[in-house]
Amino acid sequence: MERILLIRLSAVSDIILCSPMIAAFRRRYPEAHIASLTDQAQGELMERISSWVKSSSGPRPNGRRCGGEKHVTLLNKIRWFSAVIRARGFDTTIDMQGLLESGICSRVIHAPTRIGLGPHDGSQYLMTQVVDKGDDGDAVTIDPEYPHLTETLDLQTESFPMRVQSDP
Image (cartoon, rainbow, N blue to C red; front, side):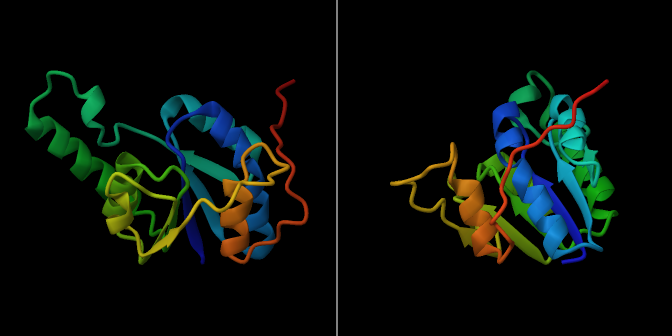
């Protein structure tokens, strides 16, 4: 993995909960370019979580937010999104959301390796590897699916603290 794109489109709480994965990726792949794809509102938060990550955002394909726009406009958004993000040459996408919308984003990027965490809604068919969410029966963490994904990807999980850099 040399150019990794972490996809987590929404939910501020989940972005904070998955923050230890960024450090785990950095430890395992110290020279890799690591970026995130988030909603515009969460992009700054993702960058504060780690100075190693540059967020990508823009008018990504999203049928719910197209309202009365014609399908042609939606297709143009898909073309723009895929061309801009694909040009960045990611070899791996990690879909940490597992929804059809995040799966489509992962697929149109054309990364050779597309890993999805517990995908459903058909997004599993867009991935090259599917990782189940793991067993949370005796979980001592708030959300055990991210440590499970981290272990499955053979990343170090001994230290898994959540962190957000504060703004002066």
